[in-house]
Amino acid sequence: MTTLLLTGIAELVTNDPAHDGTPHGIVEDAAVVTDAHRVSWVGRRPDAPAADAVRDLGGRAVIPGFVDSHSHLVFAGDRAPEFAARMAGESYAAG
Image (cartoon, rainbow, N blue to C red):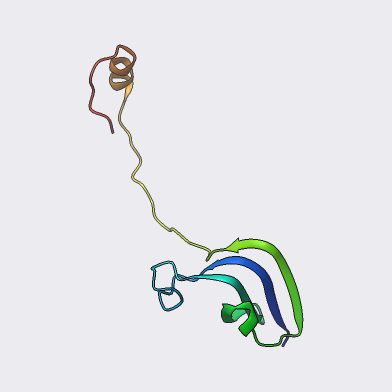
């Protein structure tokens, strides 16, 4: 398998409080090692292990990919009276 060392990360958000004591777990001057497209190591660049290839990210910030899977009920009503009240400067009950 091929390992890849990503360097040049100005700020890495890990969401692991062990890194800096905050909920975001921010690591500055960070690096990430992937092995077969899976993250195998994260930390400060000077502590990074050797890898088969290196890619410099040019000082970018790196954050986890968030997946927010949710849905909303479809609103089947008519909001024309609320719109008319708003246009007339009247109070109305929104949403």
